[in-house]
Image (cartoon, rainbow, N blue to C red; front, side, top):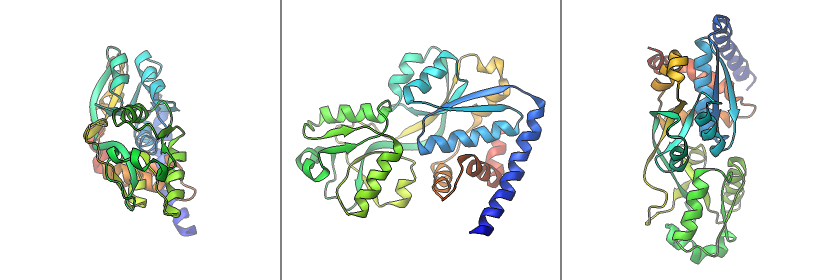
Length: 283
């Protein structure tokens, strides 16, 4: 373990040395905003490392989903790589669509919905209310401003889940509740999305959604403020070309779960190990 940490420190130091040298060019400051979800922590740190290597000073600001969209729409932030569309964040986009530029998907194949351990004898959201007592009459959610929370509120209404309450919290409290329930082989239902490290760690399943409240497969888009292309054309171009796969993102998320992991270091590690993919964003 000690050798592994020494090796990690050596190559992370080498990777971070490049941004420090490049920053001397003083190309300016880039403000990125994101939500504190494991997926967005991974992607935002990766693009931060890449921009720093090109000589930019990059500031990351963690906010709620609604504030993230408002920040880019108002121009207080330059962009984000954390827009779940068309369903999860669709209502946020409607409010600021005249003030932002959608650069399209940076990751394909995402999904949201309600998730249970595979051993739970429930397969559809339509069955949940009849089994409310088994789930302590709760659906464990995340931060109240998240798009998946509003979708779950709609699901409670559409499926008549009068005996279940949506409990808000955070991504960390949601996964903690999931972990505790699985440890005791208890029933639990949580708000879930893919990619997420929990699917690599636990045997889980999405509940069927016959009313299609949560929609089908989604994408994560890159959104920038109006005017960024004129102000910072190179930043705009890199953000426009940024794309990776669920497997890429999940790898970074898994690294972030290791003891003592630092998101900036794991992002630097991924950038170091994937030069061809990164080069495609820069060419």
